[in-house]
Image (cartoon, rainbow, N blue to C red; front, side, top):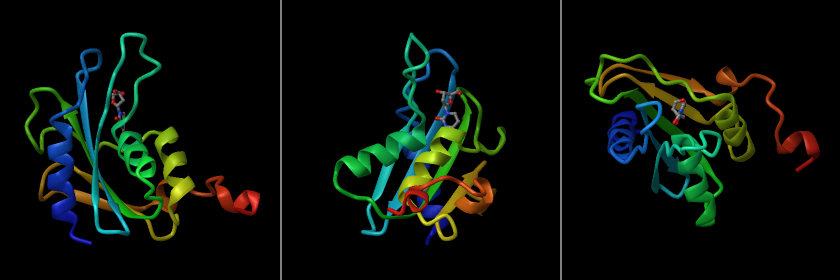
Length: 140
Ligand code: THU
């Protein structure tokens, strides 16, 4: 997997983040096993709770197109106006980790957290979400 291509795509996705409330802009690039990259951004809402994270936007776009197998996701996040490298790594929230668990092998799925094109960390889903409850627990 080419991490830098995925990170670049996450920065592209971030450009569409809709964040009038938190001003925290997140971009995600999800690599399907079919080789296609799905973009996601966070989409906020005046009622707050309908907000959708960038990661779930990417997953739901892919799944809604019939794609259910994935190799990895790159995630970038920073406040509006911050430059690449100024912010911290943007770790996925618990709800997004649970969605990843539904569709990914936790031992293999790679989560790339990037501060810039050069500064990134790679985790497996299992490292970020140990003992996650998933389809296997229900025999699926
Ligand atoms: N957010 C994401 O999109 N992904 C994450 O990994 C963390 C949080 C969004 C949700 C909300 O729009 C904003 O960041 C602040 O929580």
